[in-house]
Length: 91
Image 1 (tube, rainbow, N blue to C red):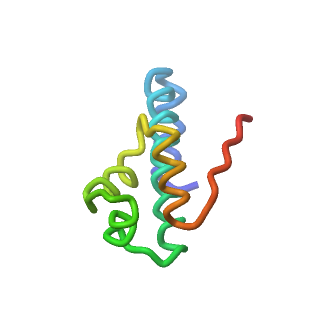
Image 2: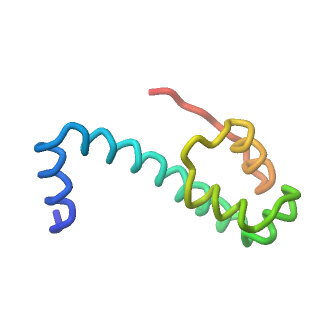
């Protein structure tokens, strides 16, 4: 465990508010990372994907970097545009 991980764990222990906020933010961050990795795996740039979705590169960047409150329909369109299928799991 590195210094940052230790700091985060300590803050979570001291503050429930920090812990809740961190987990929500981390989940949103992971969604963006997954979307970006899938786009790159498909060999597409943000410009390529924007063209396929009839939108702007800035919209793709926003999806990948700020995935909070992203609509399921947007995720479905994103997946279809990169040649994938969206699968949702509730655990």
